[in-house]
Image (cartoon, rainbow, N blue to C red; front, side):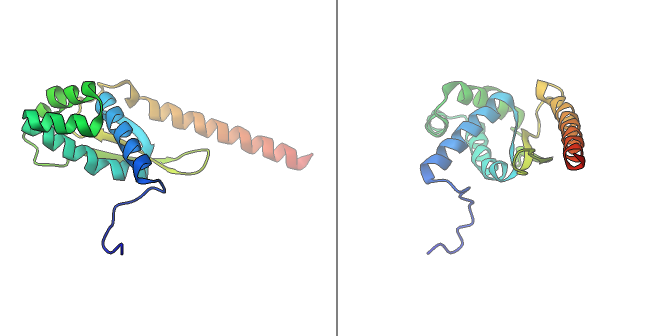
Length: 153
């Protein structure tokens, strides 16, 4: 029975879901802000927050445990050396999820997931969303024009 098992399965097998979360976590630690679907961001948040809590502890055992979960030594070293010291006074809630409209292809709800205490303006992705939204609006406007022309013909 599946009573009270609330964790989302994201329509994937266990192995696929674990690999996807691992890859998303490595990308998040590397870039400190990524854009993904809202359900994936919701599933990623507790995974990465437990890793940050491990990194705050800083012991060799916790480092080995983080390496076994992430499978990427460079991401673990950044997590332990840069991200954990920034959030040493914070008791939890290291990540923020910001909604970002829908994806043009399939209408999936998109969101940014980022570290709360990341340096503002430190990443080049901070200016991309506006440009991307403007481009999507222009594309939608062009498609509507084309559809109207096709109906008239």
